[in-house]
Amino acid sequence: MNRPLVTRNGPAGRKSLLEEAQLVFASLLFAWSLSSLRAAESGPPLEVGISVRDITPEGPIWLAGYAARKHPSEKIDSPLMVQAIAFKGGNERVVLVSLDNCEVSHAFIAPAVQELGAKHELKPGALVVVSSHTHSAPVLENTLTSMYNLSPADEEQIHQYSAFLKSKLAEVVGAALADLKPARLEHGVGRARFAMNRRVYNGDKIDFGENPDGPVDQDVPVLKIMGTNGAIRAILFGYACHGTSIAGDDFYIVSGDYMAYTRQHLETHYPGAVAIYLTGMGADSNPSPRGTLLDAKRHGLELAGAVAGVLSRPMRRVQGALKLAYDEAELPFADPPPRDQIEKDSRSDDVYIRNRATGYLKRLDAGVPLPASLKLPVAAIRIGDELTFVAMGGEDVVDYSKRFKRIFAADHPWLIGYAYEVPCYIPSVRILKEGGYEAQSSLIYYGIYGPFRASIEGILVKQATELMDRVRNQ
Ligand SMILES: [Zn+2]
Image 1 (spheres, rainbow, N blue to C red):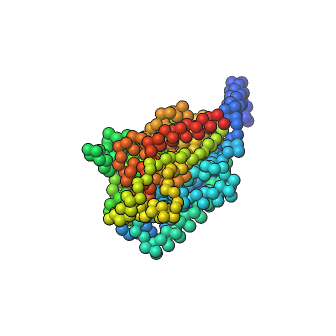
Image 2 (image 1 turned 90 degrees about the vertical axis):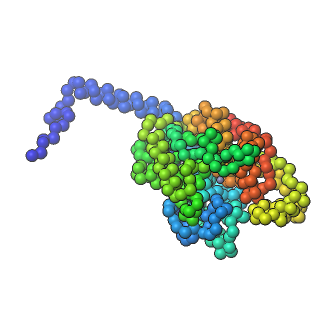
Image 3 (image 1 turned 180 degrees about the vertical axis):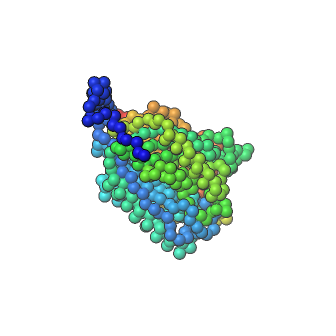
């Protein structure tokens, strides 16, 4: 037998005096909360657009990031993605692109960014391509190509993949801008423990290894993006650690590394949401442990747990005007070695030292000045007073993460490395003094003698501070 349905108001909709009073009170409360919500949301409403494209290579292809690989990829474990999130507030628009690749050079990305900027009338610096730094995605044209032993057929494949990637980049940026609609944003920070400082001190030498006493940034910034109906549309998350969980026996597997597995977990757990990773400044951190595909999956799970932990607790509302300030910092190199040293290097047994020297000799012979400095993109992207992305090009060591978080603490900074383009590592003064891979030997692969002068850190802090002042006061 079914129970009869009972309405709250009793028969024929007759209400008691108490119920009438409750209704009046409730509607007053509703009107008050609406007006206070409107007051809090004064200024142009923030709009967000989201788009995703698959960029998984079809067949075997050389993977970027390790010089030790001997042949193209053998299998695909996780699809590779390019994702775009567009923000619009008033007249300002910014598009953040998360790219499953090791990195993009200026030569590779600048023409594409210029074309897309002109097409969509974006300001300089408004299109921010952030490489995830997975070391298990294809080699791209004009990007560290001297690191690999490529046949003409391999090069043709890379040429084709690069063209395909650029077409998908154009699609995803256009689609995100076409998807702009009002959004509600909330920010929080969690923590994941697998980032490990990788600089180990052996006497005066710095080697690769695990240094549990070295600096790391294990914060997990999270931005929840909801529609006006409260449904989660996107989850942005960051972490400051190399995408190098996969190595050794699993060298030839296509994968987005730990961040791709984090995305998969989040998108399963929050159906309808797109999970987007923004790489932090942790170029001297590696995942621990590392070496196998299973390590990548394990770290992906830990990071997803950290993000879910933030999402499950109250988060801070982010609202207000969108502001962008962009510039390029000029970072000076030490004087190059004399020509006879470069000529000696051009006969080295080490192919990478030989390649770097040959490049410099070609310039000298053609009367082209040797590089005296490097231009590095830096930006501050602010939403109200509750969140400011500080985005910087290059492989930025963790000292920048720590220092920017300290000096910009009141601005709720979210630090993004590998942004715009990756010309080389960006060492701090401490790391320049200590030496090692991030200060010196990595420059060989980037074809630069360097090293940077010790003024580098002061220049970057000054640049970031100027940009922060501009977005604070605009
Ligand atoms: Zn790296």
